[in-house]
Amino acid sequence: MPTLKLSILGLMISLMLLISPMTQAEQKQTFANLDVHYIALNSTFLTPKIARAYKIKRSAYNGLINISVLDTNQVGNPGVEAKLTGTARNLLGNSITLAFREVKEGNAIYYLAEVPFRNEETFTFDIKVESQGKSNKLKFIQKFYVEDN
Image 1 (cartoon, rainbow, N blue to C red):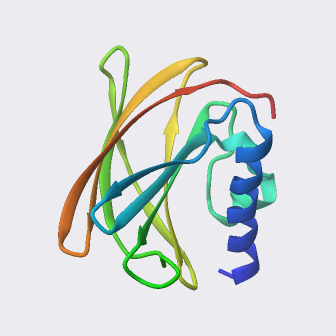
Image 2: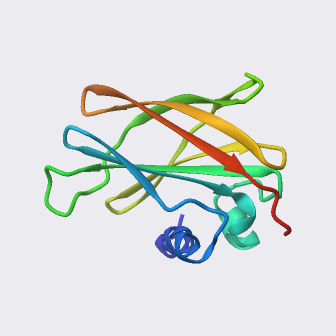
């Protein structure tokens, strides 16, 4: 994939954090020397062009999970490779297995997964992050809202 497109994806997600009242601010959890940044948002926040470029289903009923793992022991806190597995469980106990895919751009590495939802559906995300020979658990809760395209 061309570098410009990935830069646009990162830029769009950053801008969404600043301007959208329906998304939570980017969140982070620290495990020793690893900072794990995560965000969950509605896929309609992406432009159709960006969604197509990254094979993301753009729908009012589709959420996008974006996770990056950074090594704080290295100069510039570069992204590091990780293996992510996990589930999204709604309040009724229904569980969805998350299928993460890796996207790279230079030192930046993103892990993307999609989750279908209904309006005002809340999920608890339990994600295992394996990197640098260590395994850590990331857990967060996100409520999704249907957005008009």
